Length: 175
Image (cartoon, rainbow, N blue to C red; front, side):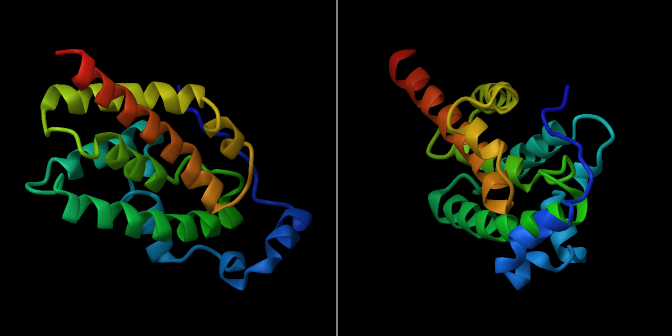
């Protein structure tokens, strides 16, 4: 079950709304596609958001990636880059295209931020995040209903923050 809407590319009026930024209006290039599709994981024919989240989890398990001086800059860089690339992908492929999974990747990193690097916590983060990403608790649902790269990134960022809070509470009270 995939949570994204498949739709046609924006109509002329939608494109006109985006006319405020020439950068957004240009079609997605190869680098935009590579980044926004999570190295192609977003092209998975089955559950691309889940596959993208899994890539985020795999990257997290790279030695030392969980350290604040690696993961925080990675979150910031890929959030900004992902926002820009997702905006151009939306122009090319319609509202919040399922092939855009950089939002899931960054959100997985946020889900695991400042947590001990343990397999059980990572699996819990993955499952909780995927559930929240499907149900879109407020304000994730608000962002999901809007256009643009920032909204594409923010709906998953919200779910990542909620996941992290739930796991921090689990660690604090669950011992």
